[in-house]
Length: 415
Image (cartoon, rainbow, N blue to C red; front, side, top):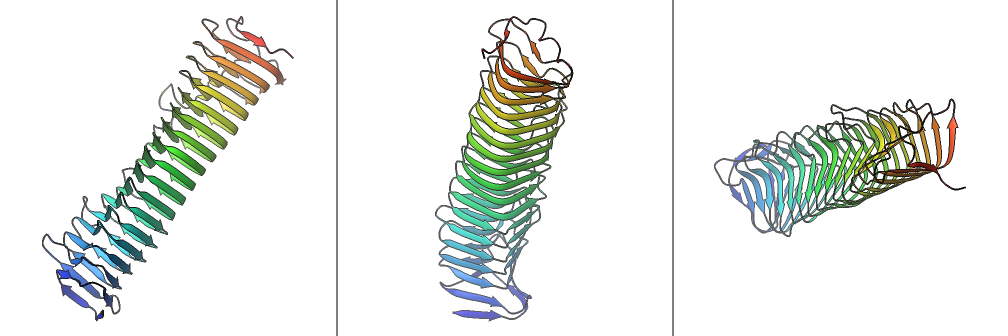
């Protein structure tokens, strides 16, 4: 059954029978509700087209198959749409927050939802809250919600979407599966935050996050073509206890670290990390690796306030075809039982030595090219198990100077 509504304000609440289709003529048909209940209930599904839904605690509470086309929600105190079972399809609709604790879409349990070309505006606490649901967002803009997507378990896919204007994590996922493609988050505390999640991303960009572009904890997956432009005191990418593959990373202008890894595993291919600043004396490193297993290939680190690559606290690091230029403290540093093996390493213009080893750190470098490093080729504190082994060193320009205060632990590999 289809009902056409002429422009006007229709006071609710409304309970819709199964299969009803409400169609607004023009843009002036508005369903309005007051009090604590929802404006519209559709317990067995319904279709709404070209309507406004204003006021109420919830705009729509529904189950069954629900379709929303060009529907405008505004002024709800609790949230726009709430579903715990059924299937939701949203096309070309808008959601405007009615209060700081409101949620745009609350999707739980067995809900399957698809949102295309939608917009969430205003200070929603969460634009989309998905708990155990299967959700696809495509061509969606979030402008103002504290968190655009808050996911707990379930499966969510976000394509061709943009997030801006909030202070909490832009995208947050816990124990679920999240796929991102061509998604940009501007501002927010973190662009993407995950805890024990499975991730698959391609073309994710974080701009000016106040803490870190990405903070991934206990997570796993593959990230391709990731960009972080500016970030706060947690750095560009913060990875803790995770098992990740990163292909194609660009970090520019982070405060603290480019990529920081604590525990876990990382396979890094094709990365450019530039212009890192630091407010603390012990940060500003391009790759800051602690208690981690890391393989990095085709990496460029340029103009950073700290070390190009730091391997510490028992880390096992393998570098292949890595270029470090303008690192203020050193090119590569191994310390506190960190082991770094490099093949095809270039270090230029360091404010300290090209290589540094101390506190039982071990460095093995083959095919090393060095030039214009202020404190020479190697600085090594040879106490304990500290050791540096060099093979095939090419020194461009003036001599790189002494090997350090004690050279007994620095040697050349057999030809």
